[in-house]
Image 1 (tube, rainbow, N blue to C red):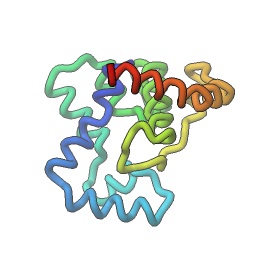
Image 2: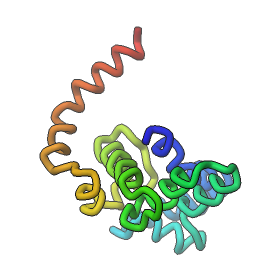
Image 3: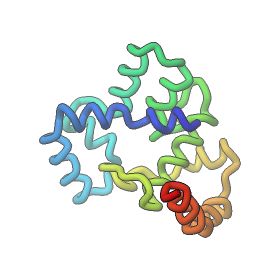
Image 4: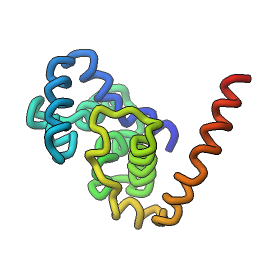
Length: 147
């Protein structure tokens, strides 16, 4: 799950290096609409960062399970190989962005998938607990970093 989470935005890294002007336009449109980031990407670029990630990981001969995650983490119901793994990355990514830990040009334009919650058994109560424990976790991480 950890490796999948690290790789899921490979396409965004590529886009940020080669399409900065277009990403600026996408960012502006995101602020004016409720449309998901990946749909706005497709409108401007003809493809999404997930599709770019999928192509890159395939070319680098990554395992199909990881390719499936980067291709579908925003839409876990479309996963073809391991819907649970894709769902876990979807939930982790969404919570990281919502909590402000993760930075994402798309912001919270993609809601938490009910499919992902059902597939993993994560409940609303679990999510509430995460946000309750988050300050404690952040303090502990800061402590570890500053040692």
